[in-house]
Length: 365
View 1 (cartoon, rainbow, N blue to C red):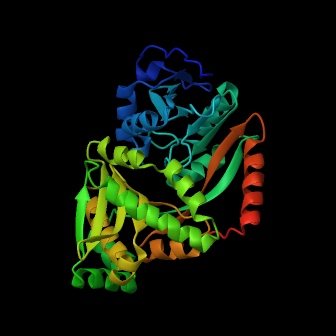
View 2: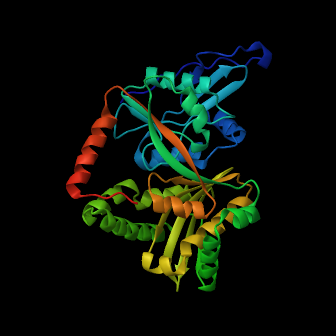
View 3: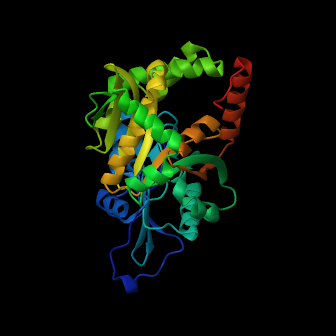
């Protein structure tokens, strides 16, 4: 298996004695102490960018920590969480599909620094690398992208929590969303929150129900949809995403008449990140349990001092965008950056497109 080379980090000098480096010094894997400091310095940092998340990913998938600490001189440092994909030798990701946002950690990455990082990855990766960035940093990444690095357009949504929950409730939630929350409360929907992984089997059961519902809407064979879902999000992965994060993984489950109706997984650090959701449509639809879950999770994030409540990938789904925007989320267009020695992404998209046409597959509206 190929690996990225480890370069020597220059010794510490006084800030005024250290020139800014056009080509940064690099250490890989990144020292954990430096990683923790940069997370603390980054107002946009997400749980998926922490060492604990990389450890969880590596334990679950067999990938290897290939994180890179960049020292630009003058005390200026940035860090890229990165993994070497065991199942795809020679390929790196920040992060692989279904593992959330990666990208640079540190205070306010500048376009020139981003350009240096992408050039470093292009020079040192064996077959290729993918970087899915924090959507809130898109402007700097777009300005820093060098020629020859592909940008795959994406869209995510996020809620600004800096004014507090009452502001989000009154000015972010639509009147219809507030009514749905009140309806769920009147219906006696009961909610539990789990930070140990104990409720992961409940979430996974609802998730598999959702997969079957999505398959029917998309003209996908149910057996194929189940196989893809179990490979993408097996129960053990979901359990670890809660249990291995020392309370940062929060699994919210709503019950209707003591039956699981809906569940969401929220990763909460300096910012909150809604990363998974599932439901029993027959129970969650009439009770509006999903609205109550997000109301409670958003209030919890505000109470904990989170600056944003990221709601994850939205893509081109109109219905998903409408739901998120009814809670006060704003759309953020961003990109996933891809560097490849061979056109693997184009080939993969071609194969997937042909399969979808054969199955008469319909994406979510």
